Length: 339
Image (cartoon, rainbow, N blue to C red; front, top):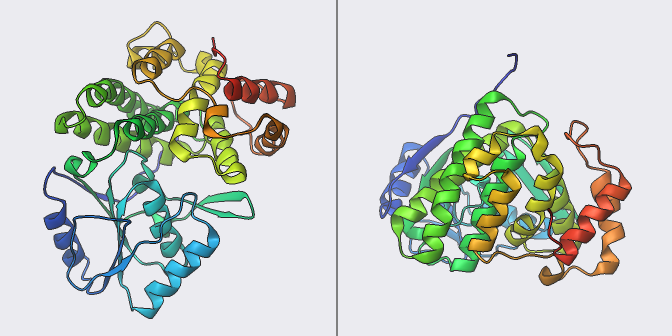
C-alpha cells in the first residue's frame, strides 16, 4: 500500500433546526462585520447583511462579476451561501478573486460545500478548477432546511451525491482513504434516499442524506473528477442541462463501463453488482432515465462526444475512445438499459 492523501481544512457543524444560531456564531468567530447573504430565499436572518439573490445554474461569468462588484461596493468581509450547488458555486466565484471566507449552509445534497472546486460558464463552455480560496471555511448542516426540497429534486440531488461517491472510486487521485469515505457515503445515501422518497418530512432520513452527501464530497475533493463528472460538466456547460438530473441519468452508464475496477461498490449498494444496486435505487426513486427527457437533442451528441473525449482522465479503468464514448452518450440519451 502506497499513497499520499491530503485533507482539506474545514469546520463542519451538523445540527438540525439550529442553522440561524450557528451561522451567527460562525460569523462572529471569524471576526466578520459585513456579511453578504447569497440566497434566492431563506429564513435565515443576519444582522447587517447585504442580500444577493441573483443565482444562476452553472455560474455564468457575467453573474459572477455582478456578485463580485456588489461585494466590493458594500465592503463585504464574509460570504454566507444558503442554498444548493449553484448558490455555493456563486460564493466560490466571488471568493476566487477576492479571497473572502465562505460559510456554506447547504439546502440540497450537491456537496459543493466540501470541495475546493469552482466552476464558471462562458460562451457555452464550463471551466472548472481547484483553488484553496474557494473552500468554505465552515459548513453548517441543518436537515430542517431541506424539508421544503421537493421529492424529485431531493432524488436528483441525492443521486448527484451518489455520483460523487461512485466516481471517487476510480478518479485520478483515488486512494484507500477516499474510497473508504466514498463507500460509507453510498451506504448512507442508499439507505436515506428511499426513506425520504416515502416520507419527505422525515428529518432523520434527510440527515442521513446530508451526512452521505458530505462524505461523498470529501471523497470527491480528494480523488478528483473522474469520467462521470467530465461527461456531466461538458453536457451542463455546452447545453445548459440541469445539473443533478444529468448526473442521475449518466451515472449508470459510466458505472457499467468501470465497475469491474471497484468490486467493493456492490456491498455498499447491498446488491450483487454496483450497477444492479444503482439501477434498483434509481427505479425505486423513479429517477430520470434519459438525456432526451432533460432536453438534449440527438443532433447534439457528436459535439458532446468531442467535448468529453478531450477531457477523459488518462487513468480511467476502461479504455475510452470516440466510438465507445459515442455509444455511451447515445445510450444515455435514449435511456437504454445500461446492462
